[in-house]
Image (cartoon, rainbow, N blue to C red):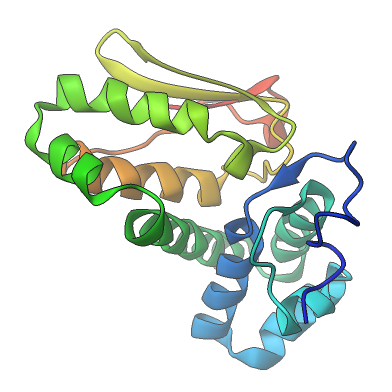
Length: 198
């Protein structure tokens, strides 16, 4: 049974949406590290138990993802919450690599020099920004030889944005440069106007 949060006909057209991985991979990471009971506790704190029992398969309400990411940060000690969010981010990127990024594009990116592969990956990131940024406004560009993604008014921001950092790190290490690292010098959750990932 598909939950009402994800039925296109019943989702408020005015509410921004995000990809289902913002929810499903948090569930998978919680279950992997803490088990079903803890996953249920966090989803219940977010008032989203129906999405744990019947995971969204399509775009879902941004507000549901905001509630879940916030509940995760509130329900667990900071280090544990960061670990779960980062694991969920890696799982999200692995899902994208397995199901959403064409094999031919992956083959090409891995064979190009990083200075050519990075701008191509950034273009794809910007094109699909709604999946991880919802109502946030995204820019993705090269800046002094460095890949930069900024999310203005990032709705899914949590302190340090471990989910976003892990998604970008996994994609860039898999497709651009195995030694790539992602820093996060500015964060909406810490008062910045935009989350910046380099």
